Length: 319
Length: 184
Picture 1: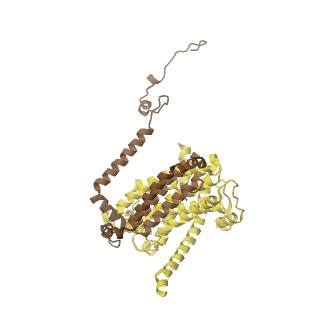
Picture 2: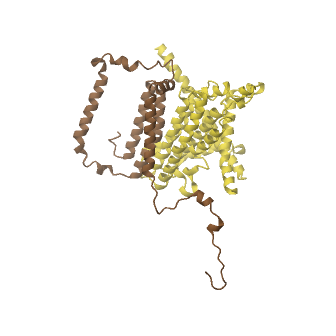
Picture 3: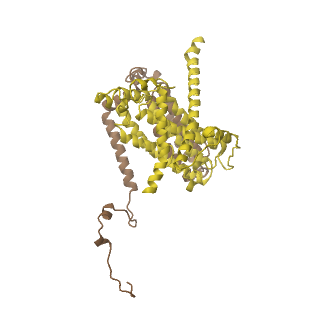
């Protein structure tokens, strides 16, 4: 019994603790990238954005959370009740589950599995079911049509993401996400040029730059971000597949969407920007722990994702 | 549940669950690469299209079940064949004791190689011709699908870019001297 506990029970407890820790941190970060998204978009439109709740509106996301949770959930009478409530659950659980294999720093990963990147790919390809089931279970025309649209879009951009991943895998020779980061440390352009401390040149964003761009655009389409926001095209489809949703189920859809976006940021950081590695391999940079570099790179990618709709609007207006 | 549920969409969802469980079985026997591939290809792509079609077709399944019982003999036959096959697999150690070693012999131990490396080694050395043939079959299927669906209707006007670029003012417009008060 004692041995059984130390062999199976204790690792389980540790893993549970790690998972809860990761989830709490992730949800906190999601609350603030939601805030950052709104602030950035407000700044683009020369507005102020959320600025009432807390200093500079910093607590806005939590106020929204309270509001969503305290509202009365409405279930349309003609809907498929089980599937209607199941769809947001799928979205949230899948997007959180994919984070289990993402190494946020050296050795900081819950499940260091051999097929890590394939696991992320599989889980993110399941995310489409949340959309399509939610749209169908609402038993209404608008959600159904927009669910079909966005599902078709998500499925088709999965292919290009897959091809980009294959390119990176050919360079690395492993499907393990930690191995991908190690490969960007061990060899690359900086070693060829004879300046090993300039490790930013080692990362795959430089040799695989076209792939990086393709992945970025596909990630926008995969997570239904503007300019690929066919799922929520407000002018035509009211609010996309979540028209019938309110209160907590709606919040779960939003949460799942933003966790998926943060997952795409993490994935781009690992595949193309060297994961937790410092940009320059010399003294002041190497003192900073890897998790900080990882977060900084993720936030940089998120900033570009957030700005993408502004660039799109500007180019659409000026052309 | 796939064939028992009344709603076709529920059937498809149960089928997805079925694939998912198959992937779980693959993970349990240590073939995680196959499991992930099953999820990506079948659950992630094929079943989505299934779901599309089923959702949009609006088939009345109760009507289709009218003449259901007349297929009972064929169904029973197939069921019996499958049952016999299963029994033969399960009782393999009894009928042919030497067979057990055959199945597990070529697999390298899990500790030594990774899944993908093992599959790749077999696929690109021993079974290279079959692999190529499979690729050719897929190519033929792809070309076939395009040939079947691509048809040029006579009444449809298409964009011809080289024609558009090659247009000159002499061929595109006609300059007419219009006298005042007369029109064309």
